Amino acid sequence: MEVRYGVFSEQISGSGLKDHTGWGIEARHGDGSPAGRISDISENRRYVELLAEMLNREEVEAVHLRDIVEDMLSR
Image 1 (cartoon, rainbow, N blue to C red):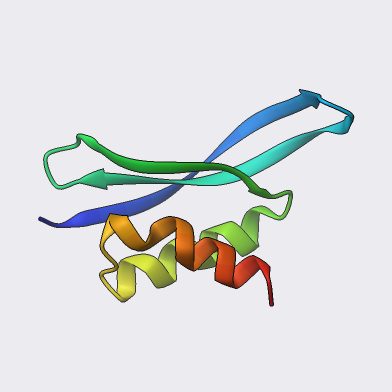
Image 2 (image 1 turned 30 degrees about the horizontal axis):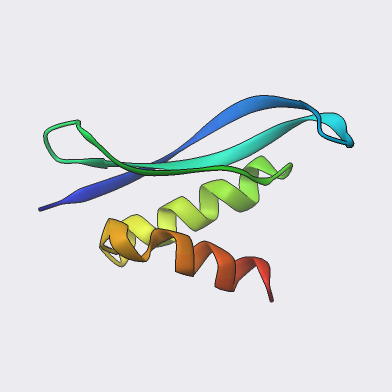
């Protein structure tokens, strides 16, 4: 089943973190149903947009989303 990735923003506060806008990635199946979501990947919107573009271009299955994001953040 086709999955498309997009970015979203959230206001993050509390938990000992400074207040900020966090950007995340949301995966949706072709029918619009949710396939996965990772919040607060980065404060850098463009970085998250580029990551979502790569996921779409490579047609990554949603089951791999978390591992790929973790790998990208560890670089």
